[in-house]
Length: 66
Image (cartoon, rainbow, N blue to C red):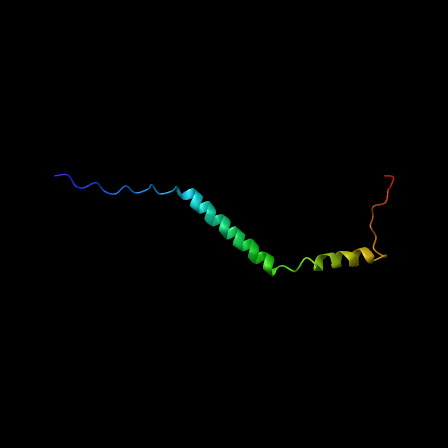
């Protein structure tokens, strides 16, 4: 006597797409966490303005004969 046919299961998806999706999700999560701990961008231009306002600062881009 034959056994009843077993239900046909869908083949399991290959592991690489699942792994890459997990990796991307982890990287997005890490990037979001890093963004939340970094200083707000408004602090960076103020530091640049302070450097540019300093008249005593030597730039050193003069043309020289060498």
